[in-house]
Length: 135
Image (cartoon, rainbow, N blue to C red):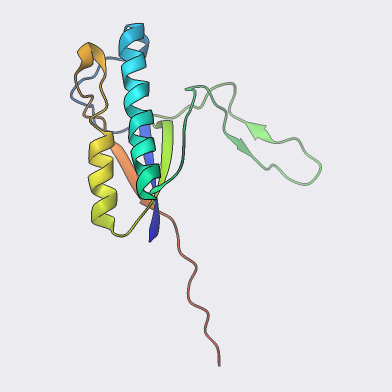
């Protein structure tokens, strides 16, 4: 089994087919989207492929270390980037092809008008520890 991170983007990826921002959806459309995500996670939990997942707020701040005894440096109250993560899901699957299959399914979550978003998801494998060399 290998773990993969499925990243859902607010922006930064190519424009999805159903490109209506969530803040313009009806409450019923938002509920249908969230239910799809929950049903998807529940199904993967049943197969043992779901590890964890969370939605994220669009607000955020970049922070970096600025030296001993100095406060961290921030970019302000919002991330100034074209790429902003909407949420993530960690899956544990047998093959890369299965990770792609599940990402494609997740991309079909409904959006405006109840139609699939065709949202781009980034599939990132977890970095495996290099083998230990013993002499």
